[in-house]
Length: 301
Image 1 (cartoon, rainbow, N blue to C red):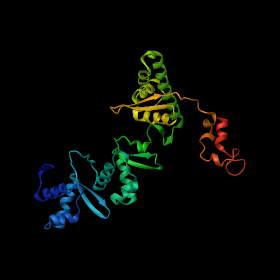
Image 2: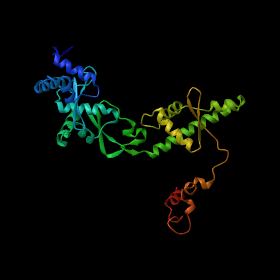
Image 3: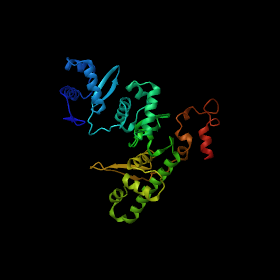
Image 4: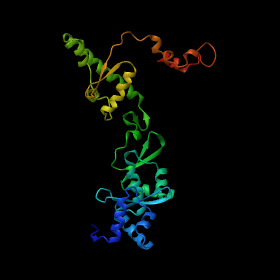
C-alpha cells in the first residue's frame, strides 16, 4: 500500500490497521495499548502524516480526541486547507443535507468562535460549503456542503418562500386539485354511464402523479412540485370531506372527489360551527359574539 508515492512504513500501516479495527475512532489510549513502544514524537509524526494525506480525520467526543479512518478515494479533500479547516469540513460533511448549526460545529471541533468564523467564511468563499436559512429558526443558519440540496425539514419544501408560509399558494393548489378530481369524476359519469357503478367509481380515481401532471400543465406553480407535495394537498381535502383515498392491493394509492349525501349546514361553515369553546359562549363575559374576532372575520369575508 502506498501513500504519496512512498511505501508506508510498518508503524504507519499498523496505525491504519488499528483505525480500521475501530470504525468509530481511536483515541490516544487505544494507540498506547496497541503500540506501547511508540514514542510520543513518533506518534505525533505518524498522525500528522495521515491527517495531511487525508487518511485520518480528527474530532472530539466529549473531552476525548478521536482519530477516524477516511477513505481518500471516496472522501472530498479540501485542497490547500490546514488541519483545522479539514476538521470543520469533515464535521459539516457528516451532517449531510440537514446541515449543522455553528454551535454544534464549535462543540465538536472545540475551536474558538473567532477562529471558527474565519474558517467557515473561508470555506464559503471557496464554494466548498454554504449557509442555508432554516424554517425551524428564522435567525439561524445551518451549514452543509455546497453541492447538496437542502432537506425539506430545512427549507420547508414547496410551501415556503424565504421562510414564509405561502398560504395563498396552498389555497390555490387545494382548489385546483379538487377541481381536477371533480372533472375526472363527472367526465367518467358521462362517458361510461352504462358500465355499472363500481366501474364508474374505479375509473374516477386519480393518483398523486396524475394530479401533479395536471398542475404542471395549467402552469400555476413556479416551483417544481413532487408527487409527495401533492399528496399533502390531497390529504387536506380528505380531512375536509371532499376526497376519499383508495389503497389498492399492490399498495398503489389513488384519490377520488366525493359528493356529500347532504349539503353542509350553514352553521358548520361559520366560525361558530368549529369553535372549541362555543358551549361557553354567551351574552356576557370573555367569550361573547361581540368580542369574537373570528366571527367578525367570517362576516366580513
